[in-house]
Length: 502
Image (cartoon, rainbow, N blue to C red; front, side, top):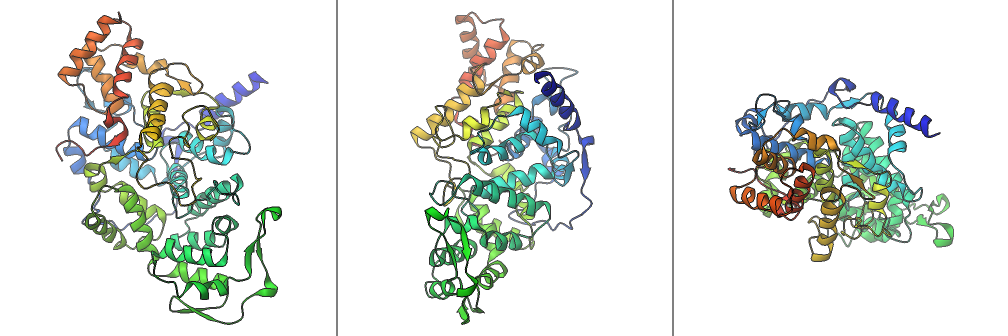
């Protein structure tokens, strides 16, 4: 059985190699309208005008946001002179990445086999860990983008399955996440996705009465918090929708015999049924501005309200229809890639670093990370649980002492400094790539690999003293561990910074 699984793994890996040749262009082309002012895209010419280190910083800011990473060897060409950071495959990174996000992977079904072999899940909790496995295994592609968008949205108040409350279950996590990915795969509009979600059992399990549900739909999707007079009338339209109690497993019931027959005037329109009310919400002119506002607030948490409003207005002016349109406008904007500064989520930091050092995970890694009962520094302890909070994750990352202690511990001890633990280990390939560097250049190589900049003169001097005092003047693996231990304590490791000089 072990030999069979090994053969299957090797075959699957060959089938889904993440080279560009393994991607196939989606036949449907979009006539993209780009923002022109506050959210204007970072142009290739401006990107190319940055020095090579700044370009690498931008590349990993974008990749890290998508929970991916760009190793040095995939961006720079060291063939002539290892100390000269000349662009290799990093040329035109932005345009290539944007193009790849519209391209589907070939042999998509093969990823299920790979994930099954590379990961071990608790069957009950699997829905919280599987999306992260999918994101980790997919190359940069439309499929990766949709998986990441679905996971991001399911961690917000917009679509959270609220696994933490007693009426929700892990199956609701699966239904919400898979519903989002399926809808995006079919090019469903934002409005259609919202309409479908509002009618779902998962949504009713989060907001359990007609009064609570209708009020929340008005507030969440329209941003209207002063419609107290509309809620009673909307709840009459939804009076025949209800959840069974706990003994009934909180199943959604739509009682056709008790359906409302008297039209209600809600949000300046007449509605009779609950579906009528949901249609009013989904088709309302405030839906798109509200969605864009929420996502801009999430990705630009430290900007002033005036700055966020300008970015929002610029994106709304492009008349976005799909979530793809909104996320692409945010992620590829000059404002986000060059100027925005914000704390990173755990997934942004950890998965970005893991790819940059060719980290090899153990099969139970993601199950441990998403398990609230784990002894490891899991996402719950970091106050960043996956798709669990009723109102979604905080827009600002929880950086209180205890939450960040778990965050830092996971990055430092489970990835950077301990080569063998129950989460994973380094791949020796990473050390071998830097093995031909002289001592100073090797330290620069380590710094660039982790925080996208070279070491300062002071850092070089002090780290070499540590190498001497610990008798590691020639042991490259131990030198890397010492440098990584130092880097794990720097705030910039956990923060999306503005590009130097901007």
